[in-house]
Length: 113
Length: 316
Image (tube, rainbow over the protein chains, first blue to last red):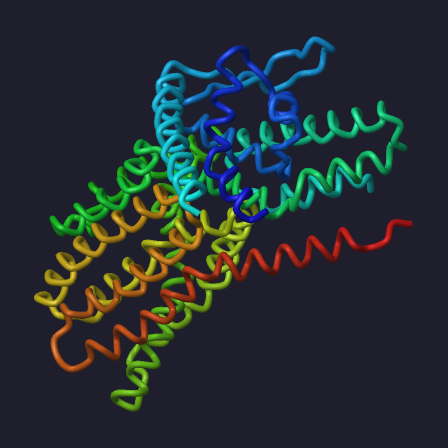
């Protein structure tokens, strides 16, 4: 459980950037979308989402704008920036290499035992 | 009070953001909690339980407030430059021995007041406190004079066994000190309400200026010139410490850097004094410097306790 939490902590910002590549979303929508796409696997204290979003905003990787949601209420929508897309491409590449390397090591260990 | 309002009030109490950012952040968190509660209500939960569950899922308000504050605590390079600039300007006045010349110090203090005042009205950025600190110094001078007078008295009693200062000076101190002290405490208390660290940034140069005035009033001409150069150097260190405090994200690092650098100032300036009194003078002023920097924290404890007592009083 602790291991999962650490893994999630390190990748939350990348996951958020990834979710924002297709359309602007507000905080709660992002959370629901993350739960839906991971089929409920990613589950964390909801409030921790906002420091991560604000950090991405401060780093100019995303932009925020108050807009009306379809139901009429005002929501703070986040959009990925060009800089954010480039950062996501780099992180995705690093993540793929890392995940491949971990899988290879694990498989080698599995076949050796 | 409604549990959501209580939760948000608790969170707001621990947030340390610029007013506009804070308003936006609280509104954003509120809509999230309301969305979650609405969804639970739509799934058949009673409203009160749905709100309590939304709050539980959201997490510890203090931890969230701390994390959000840390994200926004890192000042931009422009803020860093603007927060350091007043210390460097006053440092230059000391370096060129111009600080006693009204032709120089009056316009500079007026400039500090204007820039600090405008910044205060336009969202209170963190760098405003460096400018306001110098602009408010003449008001604070009354309280500092009282402290210096007491320090001098103690010094003469300890070293010579009698008080040298004249009766007229003592009467002036007694007349000037109470209103100046009241105005100073009131200003610092008002500014500590949102974040005591801002008030600490405001009083940061005061120990440095206090010891310079002390050396000017008691020292020889050589000591005075040497003290001016030391003060300029110390203000350069203060500018760097303030820059680091504005730029660093971690709150304890901001506090640590100010609390370490500023009490060292008397030790550095005291090097200009001739004779064996250096260490004693540095210790005599280093401790009040530390207390002065911590005074906004102590004042904010007092005002928070009073606010809590008021809010806990049962309404009739």
